[in-house]
Length: 440
Image 1 (cartoon, helix red, strand yellow):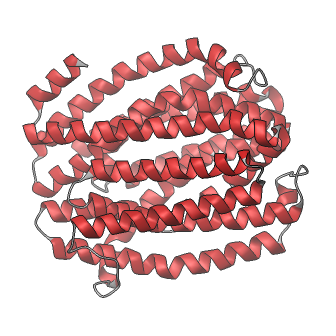
Image 2 (image 1 turned 120 degrees about the vertical axis):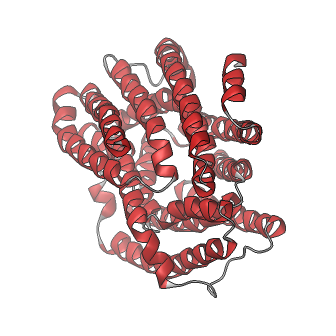
């Protein structure tokens, strides 16, 4: 750590270094919350609900995740665009972006809720998911509540964009982490109190509403010029953002395909027990992503602010620091997870889940490759210039999942882990080649 701080201090402006220190601390809190909630919920929910009901919860939770893209990618690009606008002393532009995205969400969210409700209650979604452990009415109600939560999350992301707009990534990270913690407490508390899946889903919605209102009240206190409304919304602003928004929407869609779809594939091919094994092992293996996510999220706002102010020299120095830290942490990650998982996994699940080979090392390799290419991608996405790489990743994800079903049937969990490893490893040279082409 001392070496990293020395390198950062010699390379970067002091203001950036201090701000990164605060942001890293906030991101550390966020990563601790994320990992703690994910890991703690496994034994708690297994104890409260049992393997079959918990497996059903995992499958139901995976479906509404795709509505994370219900803002069509505008919320994420709005964060970057607002930071760049404020850094360039154009608050009026930032306010137009804020109001325009809010107007879009106010139109899209109710329509998506109605459409999702129609699909959930008219189609036999529980049968598609192979949910025999719970009644169909319960499954439909849980899905509708989880869809509502995802749509409310879009409004929370917009408030986070406002918090970040004056380059306050540390505050944004604190609010996001606190919201995740509250949601995890709500689920665990409901389950341990004897509540079922419907009660747990309702608790998540209540926690999301509380976080949204609290974060917006704080935003109004620190940025009086920024408020939710539609008076400054205009189509021209949305038109200027739609290309990077579309590209960003496709990026997390591809990421979700590689995160959530394998759960559905394993559940459909191998059943609920295999789903629990896959999900719990992956939760432990992806714990190493915490360090890289912490770095990536900490520097994103800085890249956007430096682009807005035109300081490309500092941006290049920041990239060198980020890349060096990523290489070191990736090597440490792979070794630590391979050594720790055979001990940690049985402890977390009270012996219900044991490590499987070669599934475990293949999965660890996939996550390590994801760590490397996601770090290289960060400075590109921070300034909304991610279109070409997004299209490459979307194609890679689609091809991987097309092969995942047959591979899972033929080789079990190891087959789907190998598919994920190939997908993420392929993105490393793709980003390097694309970056060199852009530089030329």
